[in-house]
Length: 328
Image (cartoon, rainbow, N blue to C red):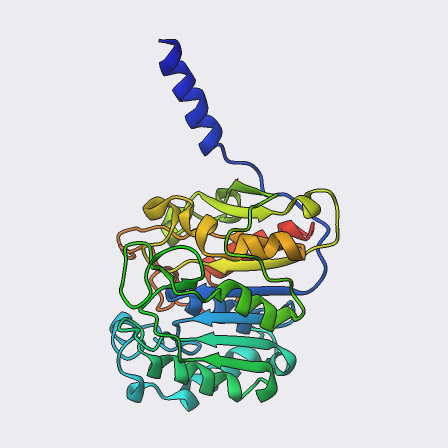
């Protein structure tokens, strides 16, 4: 009986949800994402370009690619880049900007953008990712964009120490390729970062925080969101050091309900964060009837406004961001 009670206590400790805290964060906020998370990171970057100074996109296509249509999302925006009309997507972007639904696109000019597509990616083919690069080149100074297409990665987050075989898919969509994607992305955005060794330990804490309070009109799952997310806080940031915030969006089938905290622990961000005073927030999407794979909304399953500031997922993540800044 005592052993059973101990298990219950330990289970409760490991799964307890804290309230997301506020920290000493400067204004250099950045985002990244893989697959559907790349689409979400791009949407958040474009919509919040006044606050977000950089984005890293792994295996994702251009803003508003699906145009609110699931069939377009799963066909053109994953497999058939010749069907993607970037000029049309730019027109929608400008329309949103004119209406105040996203920040002025002029803010994007000095952003730092990192774009990655594995040369063996068969899920979101490299041609789709090149449409993302074409889209950004319309707004961002070309010298601020770094695009990588020559690493032989299948669909997944490339790391230098964890995951399945580089050139094949695996259930976690994390690939051990001898390439530290998280470091390369964050170093492009911020510059001058210290690179961790592949065996680097961690000094900080991965915290499970309550996401429910950031959704007002209905339960979080109604919008394809989990009730909890993760945030990694280096010990320096816990002690009050001035830090920077990075928001990392997982891909489909990579959320907490599917893989637990493995993406948040093993995608490579936390080791970079420890050495460079970065807080990494991992919001969590979750499967529902209209989103069976737990993807981020990049075609409109949660709201017709999914790609602008009024989208339910977009506003929820914005509130999380503002909480860490002490503004919500």
